[in-house]
Length: 204
Image 1 (cartoon, rainbow, N blue to C red):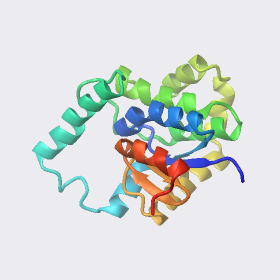
Image 2 (image 1 turned 30 degrees about the vertical axis):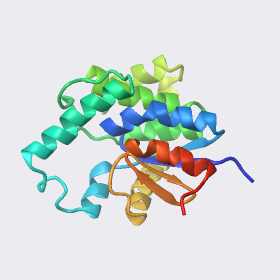
Image 3 (image 1 turned 120 degrees about the vertical axis):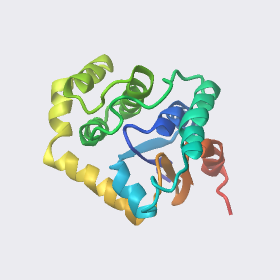
């Protein structure tokens, strides 16, 4: 048998991907698994799954799910996280996604780079659509940032980003993060403990 794999569909600005990223890496390491990063374009996926996704939420629901829940999970996972919505949260994510894909394709540490991008956005209020910000993050993580950024915006890597988005829609992914273990879907970082069990004892 080959190495076990966790498919990881998410967006580069997802609070809950950030909150689960370190735990996901711990699980993968403990079980000798490879994380297959599948960065995707968030809104086409969510809007296909539920065209009324944003407008259907009440103000109270938004305040709870994207306020109180994020704050509590940050404390639970022992991760720094800012209060409120990041300033640049609506900026495009194709370069950040491409950066993670390029690192993965090069056989380098995409796990650490992905976590650094997510943490920069949610702990430091960084604009992860900004070229200089991504250059700094990649450099801090030990990458040749110029080479990696050139690869990130290449046609081949951006085609892979688009393919991830299309596949997420085809496989009925409806949010970020979503994980697959042997075809079984686990939506949300609060399912990571269930995902870990599925690595050794799949659910019926």
